[in-house]
Image (cartoon, rainbow, N blue to C red; front, side, top):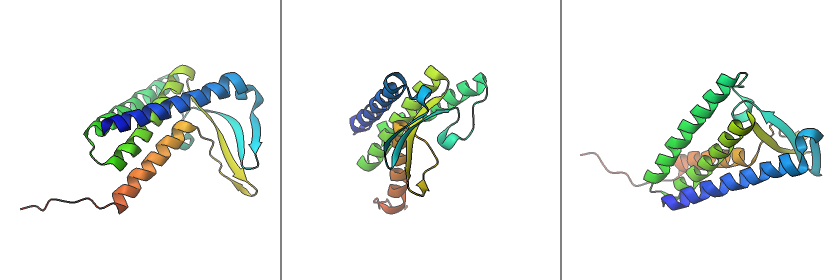
Length: 160
């Protein structure tokens, strides 16, 4: 079961890093600012010095490394959780979270910030948060974990 989780984490990590390589090196979005792709998708350059949704901005180099260490510790705990987990759905969710966390850690080490570029909008609707493949993996994984915790019944042992 753990091979599924770790394999999914590797897949998310590779997709994330390839997409960011394409954005930074090929599209060179950082110098262009934004590029419309479809009526509902724009590639928009954001150097995210914070964590999810831009919270906890790392204004100093020390804060940057604190975020790297904190995210690394969480990733390590998720990796251990994957190894111990028996429920396939939870392993899938945890693999998504782990791959996303690792992708964003690499960015923070390499650039000092996380590269975000996916901006979704359509007509009057504008999802104000710009994100990346790693963020999508983390978000989908957390939503799956919450949904499974709330709605999936697992057999319990009665206390005697």
